[in-house]
Length: 332
Image (cartoon, rainbow, N blue to C red; front, side, top):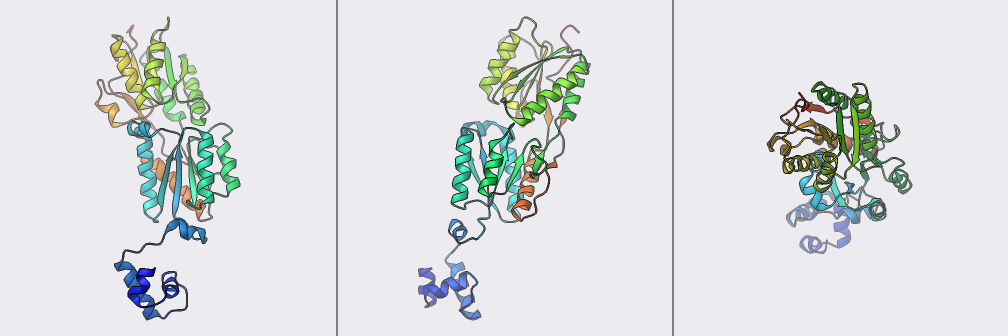
């Protein structure tokens, strides 16, 4: 502002009036000051404006993931791409933070709120009795959920996992499989519980036995649980993994143990990615429009920020892409 005032030959107060659209300067002087500001590349400081009650024009997203996990987990990258695409239109930015646990996420939300850095937050992976919902409410932060419907009063986007679970169970049962294992995401996540129940119900309708073990979306957990499952006295003949990373790790373990896929073991990934299509054999996977999912959640949050929150909306459901990793039961 001092540089602009010097160039225009006026006081800093006059520059402040012109830049902030306040009365006190003539229209001609205002245009001259704004022209000099553009020449100098002046941009208003968002946090400083927020301290004076202006909108930060920023949305916050905290992910319980390591930065290393983000490099291999396609779901999160596609989700972020969809969110950013939706925010770009109205000129919002995305503040992204990686954390190790819920207490740290709560601290980030409190800091963002105290510093007025964000106008609202997206909450990913809702949990059973999720403490973040009440916490952001107490902070007065508009919020939207990305994940299974938690509360009809909260905006956000969710996917129905029952449709593709029925399709998946029907596909594997039709191939003759009678014992299917599921390597899920972490316990306590709402969508983990919903997927567990959906696959159990779909399998029970077809007389198929289900074994469920808990993974954490990493390749290490996918590989470890695959070895455990394939070491069972009555091992499953098909394994369903909650994401692509664990499924590809499981495919590698099957190869190490000398099991041919799909002749001796069928493998399914519940999240599709380019990696699922280039490994050998290509993995049967549940394909969803993840970027569209993120954009839908971001649109819900923007509406809440504008004072028009709505109930959660359902995103387009997943569909089963059948590829080379699923085949008939080995006895066939």
